[in-house]
Length: 284
Image (cartoon, rainbow, N blue to C red; front, side, top):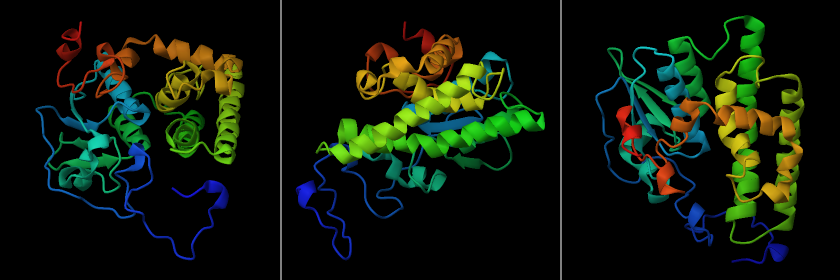
């Protein structure tokens, strides 16, 4: 691997065929499309989710469990495990649902024709509108909720692919990269902390899809579940974010949703696939 202090970008970049020294990025390549033929399974419920219990995946399963807790008809779902470390996201069936080859991806089979939805924020918005829940109807409150939802979509890559990658996963610890993304992560935490000093939830007094989008990333960070970076980032300083994160953690639907499609961590917190509410009972 090139010494980063001596690296000079070439005139034309060429792919090194995944020889980055990092197993996390070994499957990445500079082209899109399927690498192999593999159809996706289809269960018996209207909603078919293909995902992994990462923060992005947790957003959708938390919303689905919250909708089920409210008793909405038609919310039952099958959650199929996509092992991104093994390249499942590059199978032909998954690429047909999400041409960007990222989890989560959803197929709504409740109507005459299947509807595909990809990108976690789009799925949250689609489901909230479909079932009329967790998205305010009043224009100013709706705008606030959507603004924070899209804030998360634009901000979290700096936390995950930026700070998380260079701090926890990159084969070389690069001071400039870690400093740059640590600063941005702390700035984002300060944005949230200032907001939550004046508001019970992200978008106002009501719990919404904005909270469900932001909590798996930033709640997980301040609660010590991400990158073993709590001390490094001084997360104890963000007391309003921690108050909010703890409150959301106490919701039963959140406790269920965060373990669906989880295939890492403590075995007691892994429900690889979810096809019925009774699947949670079989874990105990």
